[in-house]
Image (cartoon, rainbow, N blue to C red; front, side, top):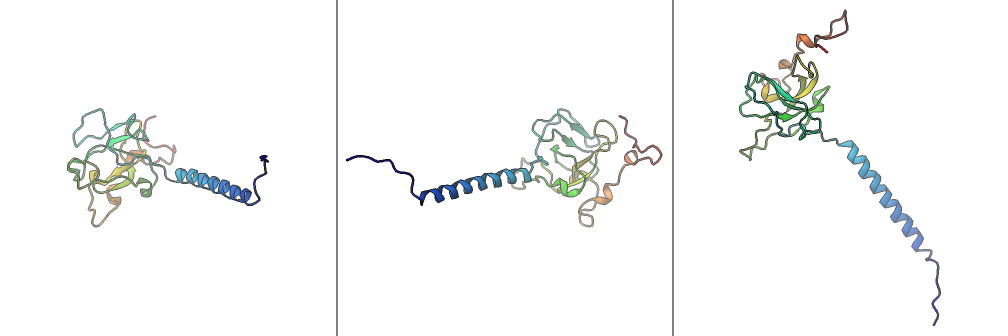
Length: 172
C-alpha cells in the first residue's frame, strides 16, 4: 500500500473561506463595538486627597481610579446628604453625563442618587468655567418640576463671555 498525497477536496475550500470571512467579520464587529461605548467612569467612587465641608467644592485632577482623572465634590447647595465624591468628565450637554447611580440595596454605597447634569462647577482655578458632569444631589432644585435642574445651573457671571474681549473671567 502506498500513500498518495492529495489536494484538499473542492468541498473543503469553500468551507475554509466562509470560516475565515466569519472570523474576520466578528473581529471587525468587536473592534467597532469597543469604539462605540467609551466608559468615562462617571459616578465611580474616588479619592479627593483632601477634606472639605459641604460649603466647599473640591476636586482631584490626578485621580487614577477615574478614566478622565477628574474626581469631584461640588458645593452642596441641595440635599446631598451622604453623597460622596465621584468621577466626573467634561461635557457639552446632559446626554454626555450618563453614569453610575447609587445602589440602594448597598448601605455602604455613597454614590449619586439623582443622576447627572452638565454644568460649571468652578469659577476659579484650572477647572474654571469648564463644563463637567455634576451629580444632581449637590444642586438646589425641585427635581419634581425640573428633573434636569436646569434652573439651578445658570452660567455663572465669571463664565460668561465678554463681547468686547471674547474671553470669560477665568484667569489663565
